[in-house]
Length: 267
Image (cartoon, rainbow, N blue to C red):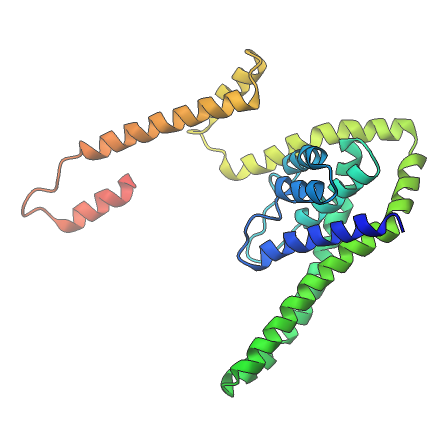
């Protein structure tokens, strides 16, 4: 009975996170937010923020494009943070437990999509018959099933799995646990590398190495790097704004087509 209340809270946390996804991708699935929600509900906000921040680095390069979700990092963050708090484990253990759970979340979501897609003909029938009440009722049922499914996942996963997970963690040999700690330190770098693959270009390279130099050579913190980055962004923005104001206006009788073409390339 001691795990019923934490399991209920984790179920609520997972439901809140998925509710944010249902209503327009509000960012609740980001590990930093999901971990904080779990920490608050379990009464350990500091631990939730710490673990969530570590998981955010791991999943930094994971994004959902076109309905394709490679990893359910929201669910992985909720369970990883919950196990890390409830088992009083290191962040490395929370990360190690989060990764396979995130893959399981993808499978569960795909099963829900199969069921939801099967409801499309019924939605179309209600629209053709102009039966808005039945359409809304079916929509509410679909939403209720979606949220209830995730609540049960969170509740059952903690209520039935904490003891087994705790025994598994205690049974892990020290060399393996040390390896997990090393891997946990490498995973944030992998997440950042995945993000840089989509953003990297020659114009951004100097700024990357500038931030690296501030941290490595001058022992700067992330807050200091972010502050300097904001200042540089403001200066670049002011410079671009000044250049745009100094552009000569299109002379009278000039070709409007050439003006549009010039604006296109300048943008």
